[in-house]
Image (cartoon, rainbow, N blue to C red; front, side, top):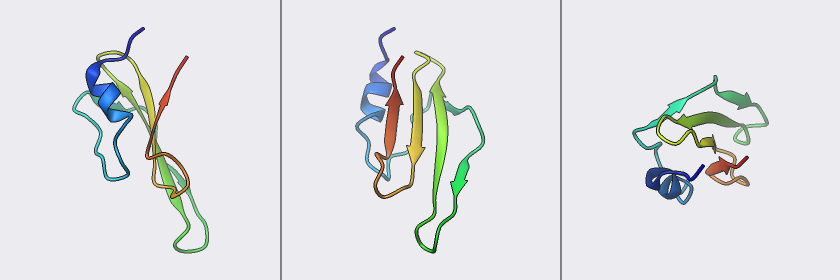
Length: 70
């Protein structure tokens, strides 16, 4: 299934990019603790329009928004 235009733009957003209006949280946030300030969080989202799934991460070495294919 092809992803919607909003999800195409979402995949390009930076660390400060907010989820688009049709992305909804699908799980609780995962909190990874480390020595301060190295902890980070991940949150999963799914688009109600095209069913695309994303993970938003605050880890400095990860992509801010990861689009999961498949």
